[in-house]
Length: 148
Image (cartoon, rainbow, N blue to C red; front, side, top):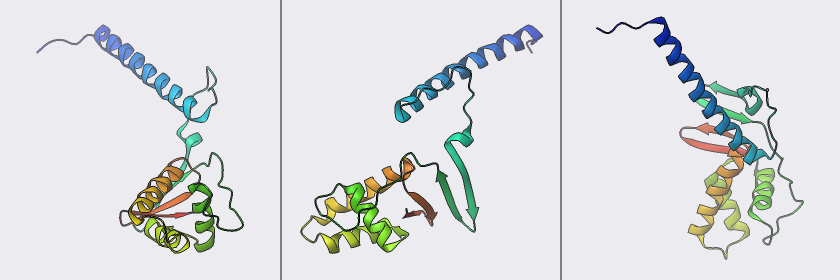
């Protein structure tokens, strides 16, 4: 069995710190690219700055991301609006809903749209808005229930 000296441990720990610092710098660069703000040189990023809390209540998990910019809710539905505004209107109208409920509501309002394409577009956009922290989501039995 090889002897491990104190110097070996120190060298290993220094390499580990260096590797972790490199990873931290990469994560800060990615964060800067997404948020557009530069982190302070000596500031240590905290997880609490990015994510408020994950709550678990009887099998439900709520990931509460701090919103980057809340969705503007239009007064009425307009088929010419972007998908963000359509989803904001529908979520404000029906409240918390699964993506299938939102798709059904859009199909009622826009029956001329292709069902498959619309379903995929809504699912992707809801997930994108949730990950960006612009809408809230509660995971129930493997599906997300979205709300403003």
